[in-house]
Length: 541
Image (cartoon, rainbow, N blue to C red; front, side, top):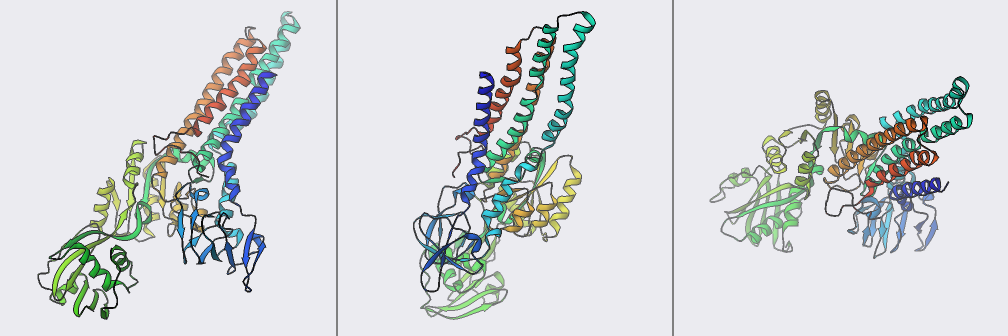
């Protein structure tokens, strides 16, 4: 009985430890909301009672109750509970904020954009709470196996207790005792508990790192993935333009950047905004006159009394910029600058790679992923340059959004394994739903991504993908170890009990002892390795 008590103790520890990383998400659920009224006062209400368009005020230390947009104030936000990232994020007027984030050091006012039932926290909690309902093939097999195994061993124990005394005149007490040993040994606790616990621990380990897996069946599917198809923009790249190269002619680089930023400061075009952000000096509009947007070519203006041109090669040629020479950079778009009739240099604007994209691709290859593919709407030259940077040999360029699903289906027909698609969660919903495993990156606030994908990464780091695949591989390996170990030990001890060698002590070990060992083995999934950036890190919640 003491051994059984020890077994229950270890089981409770295992379940609570693997559950903690998931149940901590329940702390995200806001209990109240501070509604801002027209008379400059606030009133505490239930989040469910807040409507779209209402104004909320959130003070330092409080959770943001519903998704919305900051209308006034600024503060750093603790997003660790959603993303696993400990670094605070600055939210200012116009910023989108999500329910569950914690205001750190300032009071902000928010205009509600979604009702409580549609908020990010509600969708995440619903997804996590229902994750255990999706069973793997291994778990379903164990359930079916137990339904057959349990009555079979009970019948065998009855036969063992009755047949020898009745047919061979053996002592009743000896064989009844052996039959009881047989029953204790045959109890399938180790299988029934440890296998689901392995997958539960795997889901918990992923949740600790801001990776939400919708069910253990998707964790098992990740183990079978041998082809991963990436959407480029917003997934492997930052999805934001920036200046990646500056080539000045006869003027300093800072002055070239400043001239480009001055001319483009009023343009809403993403490339123009990238030029403005790259200027280390404040842009000066007081000396700027006669700004003219030249569609398809660039911008013409008068700056400090001299003509300033910023645009493509066609603009430079039309305006006869002196000493102009066209150049090219496959990584991005060329922007040329001429000032006072003289060509003064060029800038390359491109969507840059995320900091961990290259290392993530290398790690995926080391994990046994046979084929890694990049899809992009960029031209062939740009796609080739980016693929070389990433170390990806296979890519598809000049694609329309509807082409992606067709390509993923083609890869599904070419492999016996699973095909995973990784998208940014904005326009990739059909492909996320149509792939074997849909992984949405940076999906905070994207309802379509959360609904369509099987794995949701609450931050947009590509390194999370090899991390969750590594968790999936380790989960399956530990589950199989538990099955083989439990069945082997039970088979040996059942034979020993039948011939009278194993006593009740050995029988209890073969049941509870094997269960404890299997449970402890399952908990290896929650072991932290701080030296490996791709393994499970401590929870930031």
